[in-house]
Length: 286
Image (cartoon, rainbow, N blue to C red; front, side, top):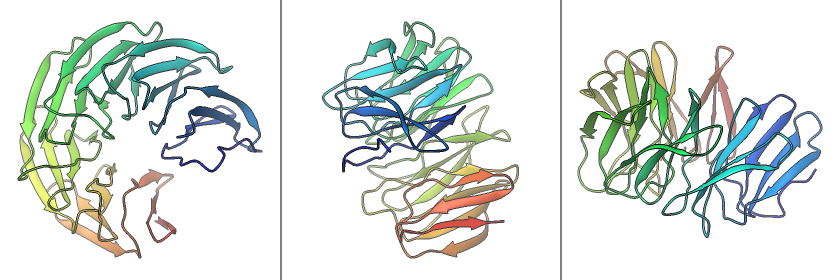
């Protein structure tokens, strides 16, 4: 089927048209036929890649890790459209909106690039390295949380990069954060050290509205990124419990205990909730 040769795949797949796209630590970005799994093409990045690609307008965008330090765009046939070099490895995944690509680099900087040319539009520095947390775009803002030793959540104007607000998460010491999810006027984000908590911020002001403890942190400190509906946020914990949290007040609506740590992020689709656990099981709820 053209899949990687016994190398780790940390990337989440992106599905567009008849193809599935994903990165691998073997240094290739793969395009497979989504019906048959047949290899359509693979692009050699030469990096140990864990970023999840994004597809927009028939173009595939992604980042490349060690020894590379780049963000790149591929045409639908797998040929290189453009490449932009940052100051360090890129493990964050891109968000594409309004003709721009937004992505974080391990150099502590979030970049806004022109989606057509790869030219730099703006960049914003943070106080720490950016590893796996990826930006979200909502209501004309780019919202991001670098994690590592930077305890802040940032919001920038998506067009200009001007800072709108910056809020420190209510946590002590080093914190690892999930990627933010934005909707219904709120930003929901998880922090994973010293314990796993879910936080709600006002999307307009950055004010912390509530924080909900969700059990133990994962062994490596990273947290499940939340999935949102109009009324609830869903996230897993290192203790193996999946939580449904009321968006209005942070109260836990229900919880379900699995047999392993939950590091991956749940997905809401077609009125159903899907979540994977370290026990090797994919769960569906409706």
